Amino acid sequence: MATLPLYIAAALAEIGGCFAVWAWLRLGRSAIWLLPGGASLLLFAWLLTLSPAALAGRAYAAYGGVYIAASLGWLWLIEGQRPDRWDLAGVALCLAGAAVILLVPRSG
Picture 1 (tube, rainbow, N blue to C red):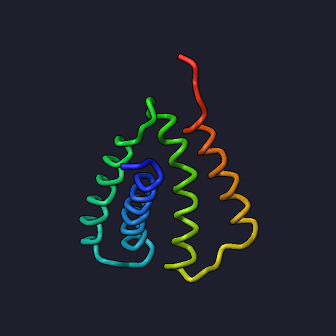
Picture 2: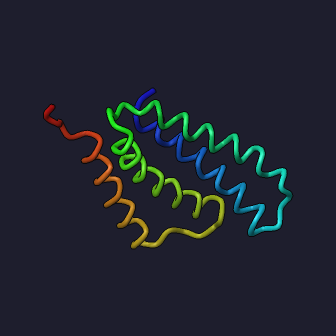
């Protein structure tokens, strides 16, 4: 699986799992939401192990930029709040940082 689609899938799984807990604790939904939420978080963790990064810390750091972008997508598409220019500037910086972390050639 290519890196960007992998990280997008991981972000969707993480956001879905975290939202299940949010729905239970903050929105008063049934605790049954925790079952698919837990499965989604397990899927998220497994997907990150498929990253091409040689070290977990770099995989997590690079993924973080994609997670931030996906979170703003959730904000807009699910919660109905359009990201402002500062949100977009922040996500651009994060994605640039993620690309540097993941894609630069490294010695040794």
